[in-house]
Length: 112
Image (tube, rainbow, N blue to C red; front, side):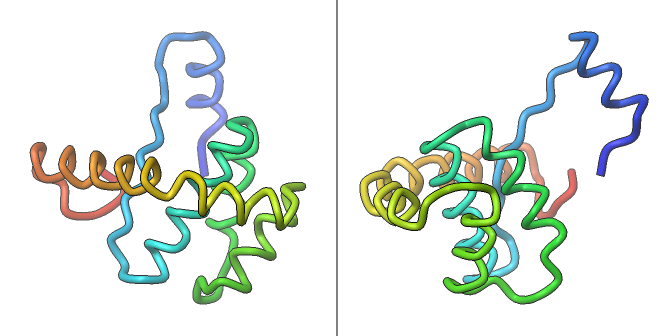
């Protein structure tokens, strides 16, 4: 994850970390990114919890495993499903924006 030195630099306000979800590993990766962004749109402070839960997930992402991760961070299933449906256009635009940024600065994978 992140070293203690990096955490301190961020806490001191000397650097800002920006997460850009970049689905590069196929359909499962795309589902995980869509879920992360849906969580963010429900409660931005829960995004990082989902991020860490997803990083620690050692199996393939599918609808069931993603829903389990979402519920494990305290997001209700119904809220999550509503967010995915209601925000699908916004989520797609966010993903497309990241893909365009990656292409413009010649990033093909993560971490970068």
